[in-house]
Each structure stands twice: as C-alpha cells, then as structure tokens.
Image 1 (cartoon, helix red, strand yellow):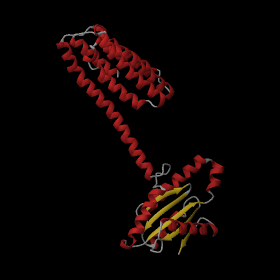
Image 2 (spheres, one colour):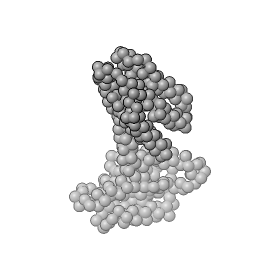
Image 3 (cartoon, one colour):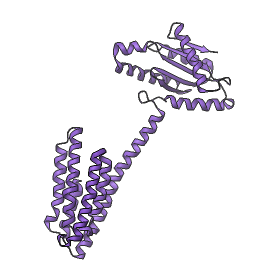
Image 4 (spheres, one colour):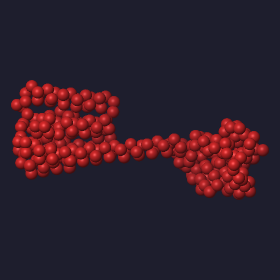
Length: 313
C-alpha cells in the first residue's frame, strides 16, 4: 500500500495535478507506517488492520472522490479492490461492518455528486485522460497482486486439506481412511496379484504408562520416532499407516520369509511392540473382517507376553 501511494503521488506530480490531491495518498502512507510500527502481536495486527480499513473507507475514498473528479476517476475500482481485501482479511461482524460501510459510503458519494455536482473537482479532458492512462494499469496491477496473494493462500490451504484427508497430522503416515481404501482395492484385485499380501496390526506395549510417566508430548515424540522407523523398514514393500492412538497398520507385499526378517527388526526396536499378522486371502470378504482377525492376533501376542508377533491362520 505504501508503494502504491508513492507511485500515485509521483504520477500526480508528473501529470501536473495540484498538490492537495495527494493528501489522501500521504494519509495512507502515514497510517500504513504507523500500523507497521505498532503491530507486534496478532491482536495488535488485527486492531490496526481494522483501523486502517476504516480510514480508507471513511477518509481516503471520499477525499479521492471529491478531489479527483468523482466517478470520472477510478475511485470505484479502488473501492472494489478494498472490498476484496476486506472479504479476505476479516470475518464475522467486523467484515460485515466494513462491507456495509463501504457500500454505504459509495452510495452516499454518488448521491452527493448527483445533488451537488459543484462539490466535485473538475479537470480538463486531457488531464482526465492521462490520469486514467496512468491509474488504470496501476489499479489492474494492484488487483493482480492482491488476487495472486489470495489465490496462493487458497491453493496452499487446499493442498494442506487434501493432505490431511489422506495423512495423519502427527506422524505424516497414511491415515486410517487411506489404508481402508488400499485394503478395499487389494480385496477387489486379489486374484490378479502375484505373491502374498499381509496385514500387520501393532501397537506400543504399555503406552498409557509412557504417557502417564513422561507426559503426552513425550508420548507424541515416541509415536513420531516409531512411525519414521516403520516407514523406513517397510517403504520398499509396504504401506504404513497410523490407525489411531498408538495403533499402526502395515500392508506388506512379499514372501513370508521377507516379512519375518522385517518383523524381527521391528521387534528389536527400543520399545516393546505387539503385532498381529494376517495373510490376506479370498476368505476375507471385507476390511472389517480383516482387522477383526488382525486385532485378535494382536491380543494373542499380548497374552503370550507382549513384545512379540503372532500370525493368525
């Protein structure tokens, strides 16, 4: 906004407009600079943003309207940009107040011009032409820059949300929904696949004690480190997911001998883990049935002493 104001002041000077026409731009520079200097916390930033938009709406826009020719200049275009920014930067009652204010101000200015045309500054056609020639690309450029910021923010948020739909936010592993989708695909195409596919379902032994004794932040770090270790261990032959809490699930495609080697490495990890293993066959008709068998195998591993794996046949 400061840059836009400086460019406008320079343009008005080159085009020979009177000095008082730059009051609105000077006011913008002063308030923008003041807001930047006094915006240290999120609350302060929001407060000064509201003040800044109120000043533009009730002071800068009317000044520009009266001293630049009313609707013969680009005040309406700047008001449109202001409304776009208001919609993006604010929400709730503040946004509603500002939008209603902006509509009310522009309607009032139109009425004043109609009833009191002599109150609007008038300029030669050639000055008006050169002003439009200068201000139009400036307005379009400002609109492009604002909309690019909003578009980039929207795309970043869309990418983030799409990621959250598929991945667990703590461990960045696939989430339960993603694994269910992969399992459904496997069940539908099992006859076409070569080799063997296994479902591993495991959790951390006595994880509640870990949380109780060391705190939940420590427990989260344990989950993150285990997730990283499991991802590296199975990344070449499987899909690893966080099922929920301290429960993890792995889809492994390979021979039983290869799986046993990886299970031995998994169970030499620095904390105790119990694992239930199910070979996926035609007898399982659904994802729920698969996990029921895997869960039974997991609890069998715990009943046999924990920190071990158990195959469900």
